Image (cartoon, rainbow, N blue to C red; front, side, top):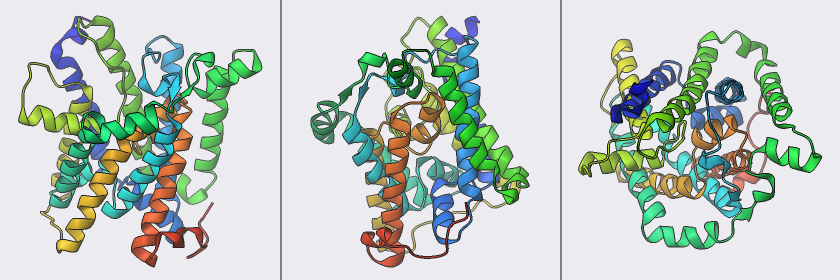
Length: 364
């Protein structure tokens, strides 16, 4: 496995996984924001079930590969014993509201950019720059104060995985049982809807995206084992990696792009191939200054919120779920709440409308 120690290995592995994700997402309209909007306002849950399926597939494959020794999750930043609850809630709310303003998340913006959307390019640029500000700039000072300094110490359990917490509380090893229970509950909800069981394209898309996340854990684990340089164990997220891609584009510091940068580039490539194959590529721009302003604000909120919450709809919604991180359900709930308030603001005129029951009853 000497190839895993090559500086190009992580970049190429990321491009491969990203291309699969980008093609599948664009081919079968995989979009978290669109899925939530249709679930809340049209009673159609097929898109949401596709997204949950990707998390379930990633969970099963990741836990199985970890059990077999192919993945080392101990170095994953999702499992750090320090849990920033304030960041999970506030960052998730900000990311969700920004996602509603833009009409998509970071991953969705990349798939749209692959088809020629200049709006998405603007969103990605602003999101990446604001993520840098929240990670290393002036906004980072606020993050340290309200997130890092107030983080909960979960070192008594070893890490913040649900399995480790349950095992510590029960006094017996429940990690495998916890993973199995969560996987069964997710699968039950996903496939209880008869119309979704016949949606083979959506099932394929969710499976490919979930498998690509598990592949990321394997690829970065292999690189960490054979590389002479430090390697971050990761699987897939689309906030900080977008910022890293911008940095590598404008300046070369002598450090090769990592897996996350390859993943970002791969999603655009895969989406572009799909758009070319289906002949639906076209240039798209904002209709007016008001729409542009909304996308600028949404990109900023997603960049800052994604760093505060340590992930996005894919990072926390799929990757963190695959390792059963405690942060995952909290961030996901916060993103959903922020997105609902954002949609209420756009459609009903006020974020407060999110707390009123409107529209058709969502399908189970």
